[in-house]
Length: 143
Image (cartoon, rainbow, N blue to C red; front, side, top):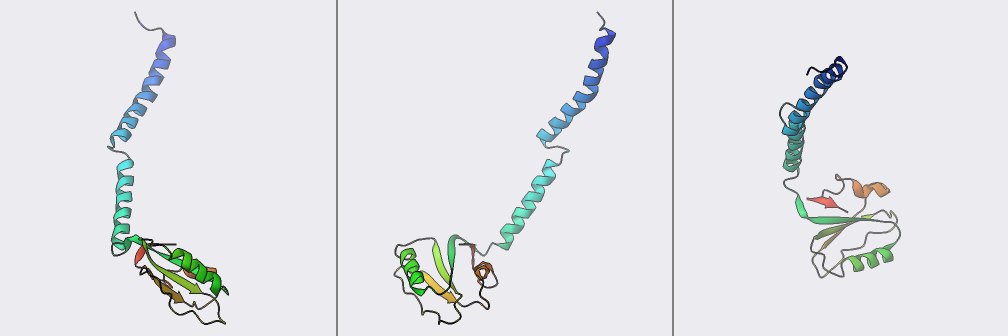
């Protein structure tokens, strides 16, 4: 029994529109002839470049950078709390000494072997602790 003329037109439109769409979706899901493999390879190239650039850095230790200004007692109290217990992943603490009038304290002695470095930046700014050129950390993370 032949289809009526009323049904032939929607069937033809659906075949012309939906069959190529279904083929395109199958190609995307399958990964052949689509943009997805190129995006994956671009992502992989970017990831490999990042790994190559950071290969020498430690990824299991971190540095804590503290910025202080006119608060030596509070700094001492903070260091006592931070270094009172052993934190295995803490490699060092860098204190950014933003006080131009006072001398930096001498080294802080702690029983866990965490180095405490003091540094007086060239200018008084809270952003000084964020610059890698100022604090060349041989690790991937700094707090």
